[in-house]
Amino acid sequence: MGITKKASSVAFGRGRRSKCGAIADHLWTMIREMPRQLLQVTFFRFILSAARYVWFAKALGGLKTASAPSRGVAETTIFHNQRGMFDLAVERSLRLIRPLVALEWVRNHFDDRTILTIGPRTEGEILSLIAHGFRRKNITAIDLISYSPMIQIGDMHDLPFPDGSFDVALVGWVLAYSEDKERAAAEILRVVRSGGLVAVGVEWSKLTPEQYRQDIGYIIGSKERLSNLQAVLDLFRGSVETIYFSQDDQARSSDEIGDILVIFRKPN
Image (cartoon, rainbow, N blue to C red; front, side, top):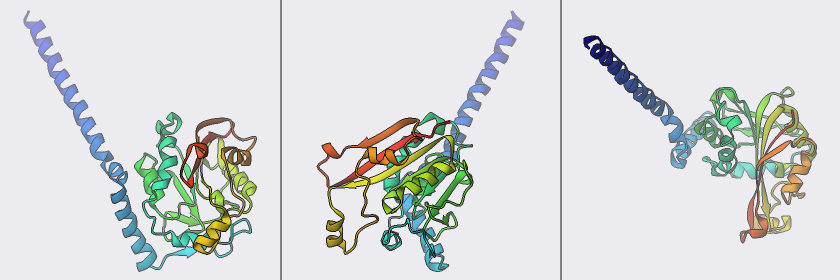
C-alpha cells in the first residue's frame, strides 16, 4: 500500500513537472515569436522600414539604381518606382505572401525554404516574409533600385544566380515593367528548383495605357499588358505542374484596377 502511494506520488510529481514544462515551452515559443508578430502590424512594419530607409538612403546616401538595365526593362520603370518609395509597409505583397505560407510545403519547412523576391522596392516586403515565417538567412531580394543591404541591384531578365538556387520565387507586380516577359519568365523558372513554387502578382486595369499617360504624364511600365490569368500562365507554359491558388475577378469587379494572382509548382 505504501509503495503504491509512493509510486503514485512520484508519478503525480512527474506529471506536474511535465505539465509545467509544456506550459513553459509554450510561453517561450510565444515570447520568441513576438518580433515576428509585431512585424505583421502595418504601423510597426512601416515605422521600422521608414527608420531604416532614412538611415540607409538619406543619412548614408545609399540609394542606388541599376546603371545599365537590359533592353527588356520598360523605359519608365526606375523613374516610376522611385516615386513610389514611400510605400514602405508594402501591404500589397501580403496578397501573395499569405496564401503562399498557408501551403504545408512552405509552412512546415521554414528553416530550410529559400525564397527569391524580385522587385520588392523597399524592405517592407522582406519584413513581411520574415513576419510570416521565412528565415532572414533564406531570403534573397533583387531590384533595379536599392538603398538596403538586404536588396541587391539586379535585373529579372538576367538573374545573377545559378540554376535551381531557390525553393520559391515571389514575383509581385513586376512583370508589368518588362518589355520581354518571356525572357523574364524563363529566368524565373531557371533559378527555381524542380518542384519549387512561383508566386506571381499582376495588376489588371480597365484604363488604357494612353489614359494613364493623360492622367500622370507617362505610361507605367510596358504597353503590352498581361490582361488575364491565362496570359500569365502562358508565359510559364510547360512549367506549371499544379496551381495552388489563383485569382482573376475582373468580370465580377466594379473597380477600375485589381489583381491577377497565381501560385504554382514547377514540375520535378
